[in-house]
Length: 264
Image (cartoon, rainbow, N blue to C red):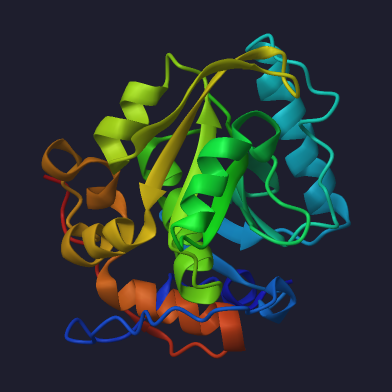
């Protein structure tokens, strides 16, 4: 059992005056992330998913169920590519996984998005970008909330930016959903509408500067103001961000809880 769940404590944080220590760490292998990483937020917790085991199976079942619900092909979407440098994060309520996303960083195996958008992603690489992608994003419509979605994305930003030192993240989404991510997180259009063979549905490529995401997280995280700041207003506070990163890399956590600001 993980530390946070065993002690039944809220997310441990530093004092409100603590500055975020978000210095990109290039070439950090995901195996350095502690296997028992877990934080409790409100009535759910977030975990890093091992490559094998019951939690991985639960994540795969969630992805399969939500993809099927949307009429998407699941043959390739739920099988994790263990040869890629990737980190999967799960949101759980009790023993039930209700949300997940995977951060996959560029490596000798490339990105899944290279299948459709290699020219666009190569142009970013040639321009000096260190690229990664969000894959296997799924959220149970019964338990999912904007707060949980924001928490998943923020953990993903921390993994991509502060653990791996990536500069840009790509994501393939259904064109109908692109306006949401552009409005709520500042993604920009990076590739044309095409048919994704993995899920058998239309896709469009979006790109987000992780420096922008990091800056927005520092400025608006913890404010609980989604109307003005999109999902960034539901991100963790700067002090929480610092503690999350420390916990990811060392497993050592100071147990000082910070009360959450009231929702606006």
